[in-house]
Image (cartoon, rainbow, N blue to C red; front, side, top):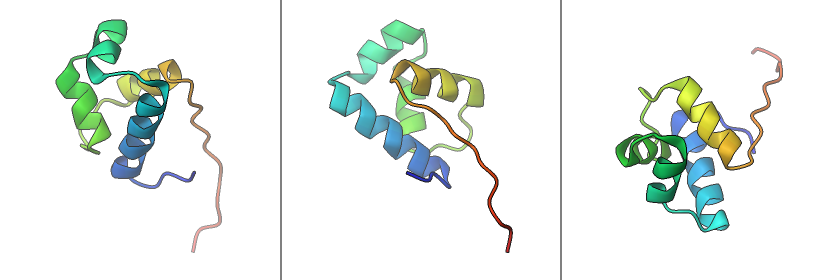
Length: 72
């Protein structure tokens, strides 16, 4: 999946969380992040902190891969 927006990133996290059967409350407890932060991230709020977002993706067993693409 190519993610090109905060909404796409949030959607990918939400789908993975649900696939694993985790609640936002469970992730909040496991990470120390607030439920509202996790909710904001899943809804694509662009002010979410990148470090926390990457940490949450890692906890969900997701890799973030960045690669160069041709500019148009």
